[in-house]
Length: 405
Image 1 (cartoon, rainbow, N blue to C red):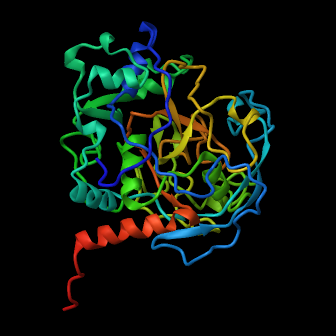
Image 2 (tube, rainbow, N blue to C red; image 1 turned 45 degrees about the vertical axis):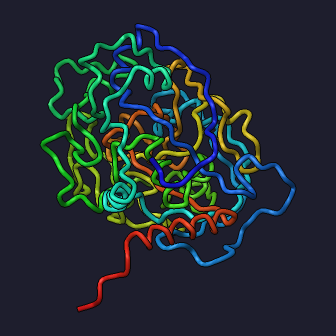
Image 3 (cartoon, rainbow, N blue to C red; image 1 turned 90 degrees about the horizontal axis):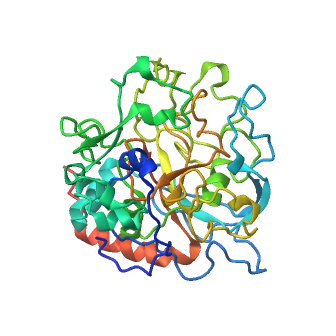
């Protein structure tokens, strides 16, 4: 639990899982708990006031963060969502329509939160992530799942991992959610043991922390005096402040054979080629930043955003500082509560998902952590004092720096 108090969370009506979704639910569920997002006083996403946008940085950037100047941009696309040769980018219907958005400026972490940073948070607070705890039926109900459908033997700590030993002879891409065939729930998998009990963080302290769900991310950021970016803030930053471009660096995924983000090379999931040097996650800052100075804003690991997922939200989104729909709604799985994830990961590929595109949307069950999802934080100008107070508390806990020998 965070050492700092927070306001009440947004509420979501309880929903139930039908028996037909049991297999998918078992894959996506890993835990529960209550952690909430801190929104500082002052302007916040969803603010419709007519005051001028905050464009210029009011102060120097906090350590490890960069300023994203406020501005206007077109979010989403009007491109055809049909699959096939006419849609090589695999644009989905929920990316429609293109709509104007205005955002106040904010500071954003230059890189994803690392295992080293998360370990310090755990050491100071004693926090236990949801994948480290045995799930309860009450927590499952809060996620939109019916705990009565699960046997006691299935209620064990763990998380979702890629299964490199899946049976390739039975892979059926005609199944709507065929990607689930290459995933498995691994008992004991968590942020400390990314592939399960036989793995560790040796040589991975500077990789992004994974197996953290939405509430784990919020708990860490609350401790640090930060919050999750909204979906609009993430896309705006990915687009270098709103530029209309396919990727943060331009229109070509790997210009002149240069790999500019960590994604899956080869035919997913049967023929990995590992041309960029990383079979899984990479250390943060292993690839060049975008023009704002943001690293891994595409690729490496998916990143949690503040917003609930709404398939048709773009049609009704407010123009000024949108923060997502009031409730989650995914027509594909209406019983499961989901939050936005953005940026793509080392599992994204042109033949499965193109999440590394600046406009690509994705969603995740909010109590579920996976081995390719992490996060980064933002700070509002109005929340700078909160950030400084909490960083001072962290510095006091660390004690004075060791003398230079």
